[in-house]
Each structure stands twice: as structure tokens, then as C-alpha cells.
Length: 431
Image 1 (cartoon, helix red, strand yellow):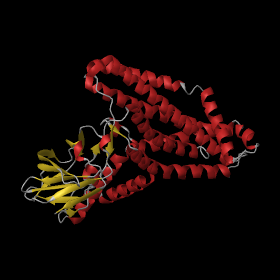
Image 2 (tube, helix red, strand yellow; image 1 turned 90 degrees about the horizontal axis):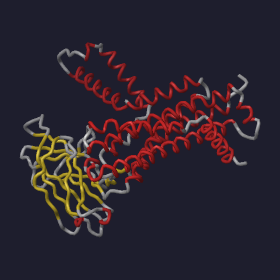
Image 3 (cartoon, helix red, strand yellow; image 1 turned 30 degrees about the horizontal axis):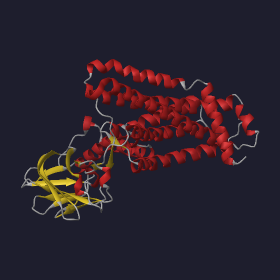
């Protein structure tokens, strides 16, 4: 039997053990938890019920998947060691590292089965509620998002900070320009929906946070479509549309935004203006989005199973829980670190003596931000795998976005799996 065959045999054994332990009854608990959302229907408007079910389902999926991954992975290898089951395996022509990899592959397949089944239950429940509610229930839609190929400015300047890259002042020819290529007319309806996001400023008013812009859509054939007045607030995601006939055979269009305020300044970034294709099948989009939850669960599974090669089951599970919690609040830690850096910078550059938040010593703030930055470097950001960012805005997760999330999840997974495999390979079971 080849190494892959041995790993697969251990993976199958892992799934069979989980079935004997009645692990799949958790799916019944998930279904009950999802059905319990019906209790809130009388106090929620019809249009909000879709969001209630979606949020309820995502949170329950993430919770139950984390429970399965943490406890199965945490107790698996330690019980093999304590109950001497490991001797029955390694006395056969199976290496110790194959045991670890087989366990890991088995649990990944188990988590994928759990998440996929919970996704099917959720979609079935949504379709049932939709059937009984009729047209009053919002349509189940998932619009693929298309990002621009290039982002430039005419008469503007390149900038840095806050994610912004280009800024322009008022002027008849000054414009922020997003260029799209490779578009297919058949992927859109009669009109193309776009969503712009800008940051406003003013030469005379540093606190300006709103303004008016003019939007012009052009194609290489020379046709154009203009939206003369569009009022927006800073960082507001404002929608507008233009005829899909603007998309020619070459599949290229350019969206230009001009500042319409005489003393105004506008800035933006490449990702701040996507366009949306027609809705794809909701079921397929939902299952694709659940891949983000699977990636997040694989990271938690990796540290729990790797830790269990050295530590006891409770400590391994505790490490997995800590990783899950820190990954979930990654954004808050990052924002807090930025605020501390800003405070320290203001204290250093100010000629007057300034107080720190809560009158803490400067050294304490400096130490806390250094510790936070080390944690941010070591921990994954679970915001990258938060499917609700797409789902609650009726957006479909593209294969590119799913691949990007996979690229961010892969390094910690590979490091942890390699570490667990290495420890397992040299572990002495007689101790």
C-alpha cells in the first residue's frame, strides 16, 4: 500500500469512528437551532427575515463546526496514546507521520461534510420560508462582483494612507478613472449596477465629509453615459447604474468620477468601485461561500491536532479556543494598535505635555502595542473568512476571492501540519 493509500485508510477510519460516536447528531441540533429562528419572525419585518435566517445559519454553522473540530481533534490522538490504540496502528506498515496526516485528512473531510450538510439544510429552510411567504419575502440573490483592472487619475496625485491611492481636486478634466476589461455583455441585464465609495475633503474645510460628484462611463468606441449629480458621504457605498449596452465586443469600459464641488477634494482606491453581474444561482453561491468557513475551521483544527501530539486533550482544546477567539477579534486588536501608535506619535511630536488614555505610562502603551503587533503577525485574521460580509449584501464569493482567502489560510495550516507531523514522527509512545 502506498503512503497516500495508508493516509486514506486512516482518514476513513477517523470518519467511521466519528460516526460511531454519534457526532452526526450535531446536525440535528443545528436544524433545531435554525428552526428556532422562527420564534423571532412575528417581531421582524418580512424583508428582515432573510437576513435573520442568514445570520443565524452562519453563526450556528461556525459554532457547531468549531465544536466538532475542537473536541474531536483534541481528544483523538491523546486517547490513542492513553488507550494504547496507537500500538495497533504503528505495528502495521504505517508510519507515525501517516497516522497524524490520516487523522488530519479525515477531520478535514468530516468538517467539509458537516459544513456542506448544514449549507443544504439552510438553503432548504430558506426556500421553504420563501415558498410560504410568497413575493413578500426577498428574492434569494447572489451577485458576482467584478473588480477593475486598473485605477488611475487624470490631473490627480498618488497618495498613501488609509488604503487610498489616488486623489483629485475640482477641475473640468480632473477625474478618478476605473478601467474594466474582459466584460461579457451576456453576464449583465439591461443595466449594470456599480457601487462607488469615496473619501471627501476640502481645501477650505478639513472636516468635509460629504460632497457631490459627476460620473461618466465611457467605452473605446467613443460612447458615453453621464450621471450629472451624485451626492455621497465619505466611505458611503453609493450605488448607481448605467446601460449594459455600453459594454461592446471588446468588453472594456472606463468609469470616471469628477469632483463637482469647487473647493472639493475626492480620493479613492482600486477596490472602491466594483460592478455587479446578474445574480447566479443562490444555492451554488452559498455553498461556495461556506468554503470560507471551512478554511477558518481548518486553521483551528490544525493547531488543535498539532498541539495534541504533545499536550493533553484539555490544553489542546484550550489552545484551539484561544486561537478562535483571537482570530475573531483580530480587527479590534489591529484598530487598537493603530490608535495607540497615533497617540504615541502625537505625544512625541507635541511640544506640550499630553496625557495618555487612562493616564497610563508611555512605556506601558509602547509595550502593549509591541505585544499586540507580535500577536497580529502570529495569528490569522478571521475577518478574511467572514462570509456574512458577502451574504448580507447579496454578493457572491468569486473564485478569485476564495483563492485569496485560501492563500491566507494555507501558510498557518501548512506550518502547523508540518509541525504536528514532525513531532509525531519522533514521538516515543513508551513515555
